[in-house]
Length: 517
Image (tube, rainbow, N blue to C red):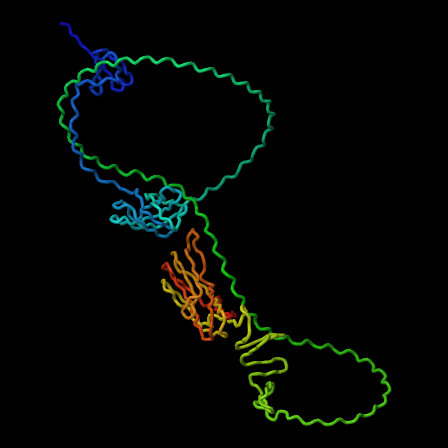
C-alpha cells in the first residue's frame, strides 16, 4: 500500500489574523504556535470563525500567592495647613502614616492645584504612627497666604546644588564686511484659482449575505491540574537617582525697611569767651586851639527856692553786700537779696523765675533750676529735659526670654497739672545669634504702657525679612497732677531664643518734654 501523508492548512495565529482568509466548508486551519484550530464554512472569514473543540476547559484559578514586601513609599498628601516657609526656618505638618521617610531626606512640598507655590527642604523628624513631619526649609517659590489652609503634595526631591562659576567668555572675532545686496526682481502675478468640480454620488451598498450555520460544539476535555504558584521574585534594586533639577528662581529682594527717625539735635553749647581787645592805635596830633571869644556878661542870679522836707529813706539794710539787689522790707527797711545779684552786666537768679506775662530777652538765659510759665496755650512747651546714660543710671547689659525686662528707670515731677508728658528714648542694640527673632520694646509710666515698638529680625539669610526697629522709642502720658511719675524702659525677645544686647554710650539718651494741653 502506498504511503499517503495528509497535511492541513497551518500558520501562526498572527499570520491567520493578518491574512483573514475564508476557509472552505469543512476545511481545517491550524495555529502552529497555539495548537488551536478552526473549521471553515465557506462563508465567514477566519477572524469571524470560532475555534474548534480540541482544547479543554480552563481550570480553576489557583490560590493567590503571599503578598510580597511593600517597597519604599514616599508620595503622600498633607492635611490642610497654613505654612509660612522662610529659608532656614522649620515647618511642621501631618501626612500619611507608615511612610518610609527618615531624617535627612530631601523633599518638595507643592500646593495641590497650584504647582507654582512650593518649597524644598530637609526632613528633620517623621513619626510613622501619627504622620507628624518636621522640615527645615531650603528654598521657597511662589506665595503662601497666611490665613488660608491648603492641601500639599509631598514627595522626595533633590536639593538644588550651588550654581557653578561661569566660564570665561572668549573674545569676539572681527566681523567681516557685509557684501552689497542685489536688487530684487519684480514679483510675478498670481494666477487665478480653478473651480472645484462637483462631488460624485455615492454608490449603492450591496446586501449582506446570510450567516452560515454554526457547527456543534465539541465536548470539553478534562481540566488539567493547576500548577503551583511560583515564588515571588526578588525585588529589583532601586533605580539610579535622577539628575539634579535646575536651580530654582531667586526670590525677589525684600522691601527695604523704613529709615529710622533722625536723632534730636543737642542743645547749643555755651558761647566761648570773648577774645582780647586789640591794641588802640596811636592818637593823632592835636590841632591848634582856636581863639577864645570874649566872655559874655553874667546874668542876674535868681531867688533861692524853698527847701523841701527831708525824705524818710531806708534806715536799715539787712544782709548788706556788694552787687546784691535791694528789695523793700517795710516803709524804711530793705533786704540785700543773696539769691539776686547784678554786677552791672549780668543779673543772676539763684532759684526759680516765675512770670505772668512774656519774658523778653536780648541775650542768653542760663538757669540751673526750672523756668516756669504760669500762663500758656495748648501745645506750648512748659519744660524740657535731655538726659544722658549716666543721668538716668543706665548700664550696658543683655537679656533673653519672652518676659519684658527693665533696662532703665527715671522719676520725673510734672510742673503743671494739665499737660502732656512726651517721652523719647534711644540706645544701641544688637542680636547675638542667627535664628529668627521678634523683638519688642515699651515705655511705661507708673506701670501703664504708653509707647511700644516691634522688630522682626532674620540675619544672615538671602531672604530679607528684617523689618521695623525697637529704638528710638516714643510715648505720651496725659498728666493731671504734680505728683512724681516713674518712667520705665523695657525690652523683650517675644519669639526666638537668641540674646539681645543693649549699650550705655553716647547713643543712649532720654528726653522728657512737658507740653500744655
